[in-house]
Image (cartoon, rainbow, N blue to C red; front, side, top):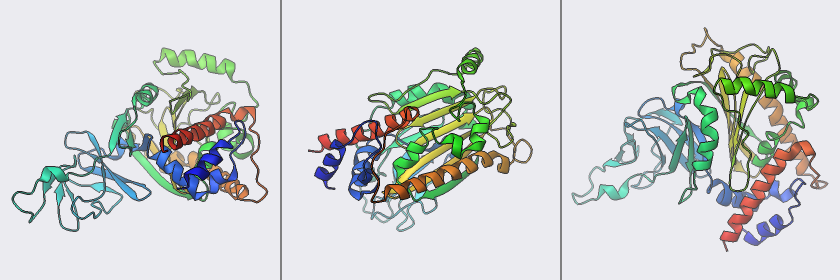
Length: 399
């Protein structure tokens, strides 16, 4: 990594303007982001509904690393590097499954779900198994959402948990059903995906379905009176409404806002998708919007949750995972259909994906120059400021 190049680039950042071209296209910048952002902060990996029973696991692929996220016999969630302590082979070959024991396919070393080495066959009698447990990854669970940290010493999780827990609790994710997971690869820098999901300046022209569901998304409607009225109802029903902003030293944004009057859920026709989720009693909980920098987005309505996990591949490629969750008692074909459940965010996601890819194509032009943000892009400014400041901190520490 060319530290001096990245430092010089960071020093050119002009608050209130989009980033210089190299922030989106340079491999040097991408490497710095990986080291100082993705390897130092808490990353959203998935949810506990994906691993409902002991031994259930899924893999999260992060650059050269494959991380095993697995439910232990004690019901706890564990995270391990997917590499055997013998000669380094990957252990889990499938992206998801169930493993009563983690057995290396190369020489059959056997690990328990918590990473403890149980059997290293044909090793000498004085071989110390305790010294060769799987390398653990820091893991935290907040109301069913799983976060991991690749840092040697994980940062505090307290602010994230405090911000997310009150909004997540009514959904009872740990009891929920994973209805669908879909993966996409975008030809765009990861920051453009994040920036796109931090503003609705584009919504009026790009998202007719979204604007049809969310009052004010077109930025032409006053939502103040409706929001105040709804907040009183939500508070009376024990639902969290406190706005959480990303400020210095924090990474989480949380909000609850109303759907358009007469709209029951995020659906193409505006009608409910499924039975109310978790502790929700009706279809009038509005929308819970959650973000945690750098890679987690969630929108939750009364009857389902949609999450988005953003994973950079390189400077010009980003993997995106969508996951839909419904109530534990919701029965496919009776209470909901996959087509209706996924349609809203598949359409909106496709629209956003094209916007991001077109944005990246334009940024690569010789004519690209940073442009000024509009006032309604304040959350994009917040995100970009966070990225630049986080890079700056990491670069200063790496003298």
